[in-house]
Length: 619
Image (cartoon, rainbow, N blue to C red):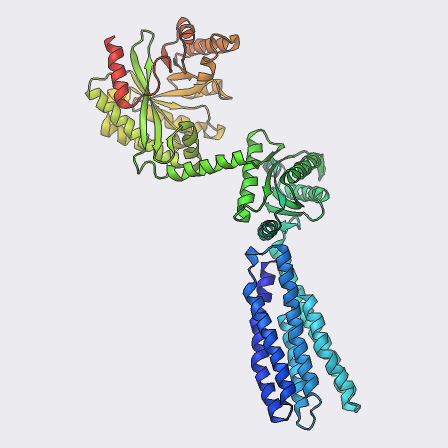
């Protein structure tokens, strides 16, 4: 048992042993003065003080979290010698006083020796390598003393002393076994019998300290089983548990000697190992091990007559002296592993500096995004939508974020982060209110538009308060005529389990006169089925199809098909991302009704949009 608790326990015994040396030692010094053996007792006590000072130094220098393995081993060896020295001194005082029959000091010496043995069996039970030799150091001289008395009672005492020695060893061993059992339960996974997360993090911190001292490198592999949840859901958790045990057996076969394998939880496992002088060699070893693990894990499993196939995604992080804590490298491996997931699973990805910079940037964006609304950093820009005559008939409101330290942050960066963190609901509420208020102000200024488009997040649309919020804002800022100008844009990224809820919400909102458009149409995997079920009024052809018009026949065919389909379904069509005259001409010739893109205007601040609108209308 060599985890933090072991060292803490041993660390706490040092002052106890110091007290048990110094204060009772004064009593022996006094008895020596009374019985004409002061000088030997005085020399003995000086040795006690020296050992106590040694123990005090050991007590002060232990810093488990900052020490590497070699420094901890060195401290443990020093502490072991301190313990042996402490109890050898009590054996020495026993040998000094046990011969003083005239002063009856032998009785005190015998009692002290027995007491010291009891103390050793109690305080040192956590470490078998300490309590066993210590008990013998203390009890063997006592047994020999009783044996050489030469009287019958001496033989009886010898038997009693041997019996006591056995009892002390038995008690200490029983306590040790209980401690080891508790330690094993606390540091091992109950299902797979390998190390658990708690142990691994402590071990990893120690490895990091060692690497910091040596300047070497080690690897960290985070292994996540692909689609394991499907096994649990379809075949039951018993089959899943057996599968995990088989997976662990294969991982253990491939794990190199000296490496540590642990289960972080669920179907995630982690391996750390290696001491490499160079980073390149460490990376090579990590990738080779990862490839072997993936190949082995993909082999067929037979569990309760079920033939199962699974793969794994592995994220790799290289451990070096630069890490602040163990969690840093686990998080890096986790980020790399999710990179594998994003690219289709069943592969390996190594965390690198580019990814590190990207993650740090994302975290900074996430942190500052929490204050963006309070600091009035979120504004709306407006991109015109033109009809076939070139008249501005609509506009799309687009969120923009300008931060003092980050500058202008692209919506492609901060909108996904807002989605993932839940900030999109608060951000969406701000955009809705700003857009509703702007529509009213423009109407009062004589700015007449057929439609005013606002992007909605699926998370925002399905939020419990969305309908009430839209109704409140409509009553506060709009009338029935202005509500009919609103166009809420949604994307095709609707989960199958959410589709019924989405349709319900859309139908309720449409009762206010608000219309719905499907943004980025054609990029989703279920567009046709959604067109039949969702109460849509408009579709927007994704810019990915528009940008290839003029030089890719496949793109032209796709756009023509979308336009024909929209006619059949009586849906309006907006082509977004129009950037060239060639693209516009193609769309115009194929009866597209509305156009949006840089060919006409980029998203504009409110004052610039109003100038553009008036210029177009007057022209």
